[in-house]
Amino acid sequence: MSIFKKFFKDIVHDRDPKKESKEKPKYYGTVIPYPNFNASSDASVLQSGIESKGVDEDVIIAILVKRSNEQRQKIKAVYEASSGKNLVKSLKSVLKSDLEDVALALLMPPAHFDAYLLRKATKVNQQGFTVSTLNLKNLYKQDLEEVIKDETKGDFMNALLALLSAKRDESTEVDMELARKDAKVQNR
Image (cartoon, rainbow, N blue to C red; front, top):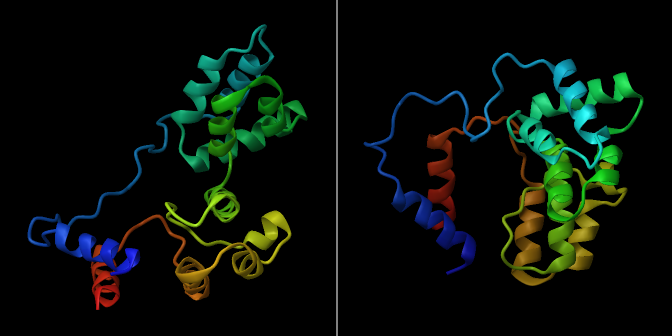
């Protein structure tokens, strides 16, 4: 049984439709929009944290991890407009190691982060990655289909190409009934 069939089979059998709530939650992630959000205030606090002697990593972390991606994009735009500096470059210059990686990842729009991970996955190896397909061409100036064909092979390549050819809804809401139907089709 292929890994994809097993994955979808597990999804279908692990859920009891009778126990699931009919009401859809408003958000699906663990980071929800910050109440009383103020992009200007957050950008100013970030700038102070970046420019303080020794860098105030706690301030940077507190802002970035408690804001939704949409809010982080607004903070980034306001920071750049008010300071005239690129927030990503500013953080790169003061942060190191894992904290730098996390901070920069948090500042990527979801589509860019997915493309980044896909590119990284095709460079590293062919196993162990759940892949989200996007328009890699805009971000890396390479055609995604060609990257997949050049850097992967076998069933993994075929699965990625199949994902690439499918149309995908980019909204953040999940239609559980449609997910079940898709899983059942994959399980055949």
